[in-house]
Image 1 (tube, one colour):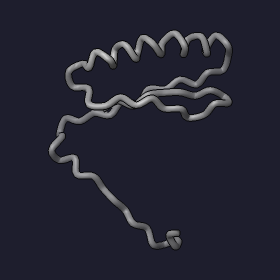
Image 2 (cartoon, rainbow, N blue to C red):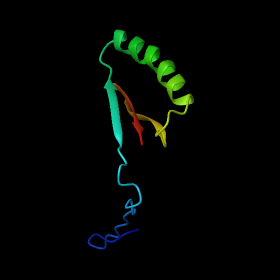
Image 3 (cartoon, one colour):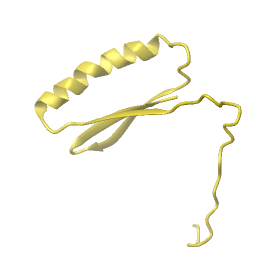
Image 4 (spheres, rainbow, N blue to C red):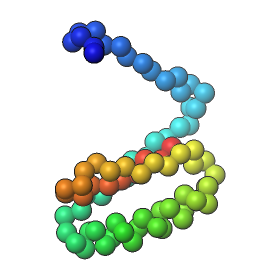
Length: 76
């Protein structure tokens, strides 16, 4: 366990990726209609990612919370 004040910071060298862009998209669901929207968009997004578009290095689905439902994705 780290002692307060003794923080070890680690950094990734991204110098070889000068054009790297990270995109975060999210949706907080406040109603049943919103749940339907999330369920409708999910398969569409998965199909688009499955096509392996040029330039997409990684796609990650994120779940920020379940109550209220807050989901998103991160793409590199």
